[in-house]
Amino acid sequence: MFVTHIISGNDFERAVLSLVLGAYAYTVQCYDAMTDFANAENNNPGCVILEVNERMLAQTDLSERLSALHQRFPLILMADERVAPRLPRTVPGLALPVIRRPVEKAELLNLLQSLRDAQSVG
Image 1 (cartoon, one colour):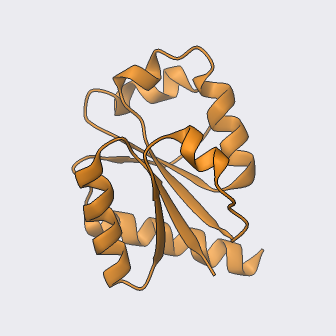
Image 2 (image 1 turned 60 degrees about the vertical axis):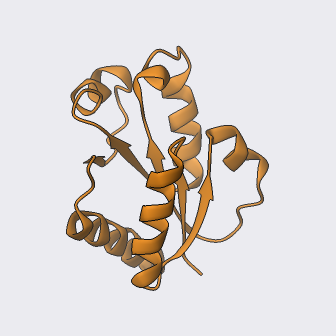
């Protein structure tokens, strides 16, 4: 079972993404923070959608944390128009897809489908 893990500190955003993805037959698990996700048992294949905000950009270990997470799951970063352009400088060497908020449904669904297809082939 392919599980989409959504990590976001925004309750509304988690709820909306969960509803939209659930309507398209995606299994979704939501977390308030990366530590909540790290403490949960996540053995099913899937991917992680991680909200990156200004506060996270200031963390000195962000690149290492994202790299460790990316080793376990395909990772999609979600950021607003202020944060998204700064991500390549903040996490150099990690070629990760970035979706901008507000999230376009078609863009998200296409990206998730490509990740699901890649995992079923691999």
